[in-house]
Image (cartoon, rainbow, N blue to C red; front, side, top):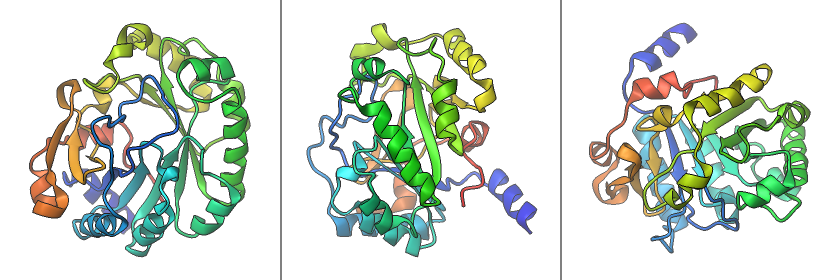
Length: 284
């Protein structure tokens, strides 16, 4: 039965995983960030997000990743996570660690399957140069990682590879954290989001491969620029699907106005690329 379900998911071209960029605000200024949402200064209400999450569940989505901005700045994040789990969704969160503390963990530990933390370097100076942290970011991630693992929650680390860190040895800190999954992304530039840093941060495919080769014992899950294009289903803070085709964003009509199915038809998605980049794995 399990094998049948896996094969069905591979053959089915319908999306089953969604990144919900529901909160546009952030307390950091990562130079490579592809989700600044500079033109959006508000988010939908909690009840509107409840409606969207329920719509996604009713349209056969199985996994939801809460993202931002920085999602832990949202005062009702815990309510959204708990609601999604009650609908039977696999729940995930990607954070810079800001709101990851024992009180928050206690609220969501029975409703969250994965927590992902962003870590691009073991050196505080490199983190600072990338626009993240105030000299204590790395130690903070080490502390947050322990909290997540001690709570029995699956831990993922996300690392964006740029000109500032592609030749760094991160084996030591990754061995110390020992995440269940480690994703390494080749820095991706999107028009009107982060292209002003392209010249200073972009790396070649060879440089990205060099980083992967240096960390092969850590089993990185790599994503090149090509792998990331059209292989994600994403929702922006206005409740619209958006896609990164041709290195710029295109948007659907609001999900609450036209429904999930109609909104999905307005963007392009490549399910085979989703599978090829390792998007389907044992989520829960």
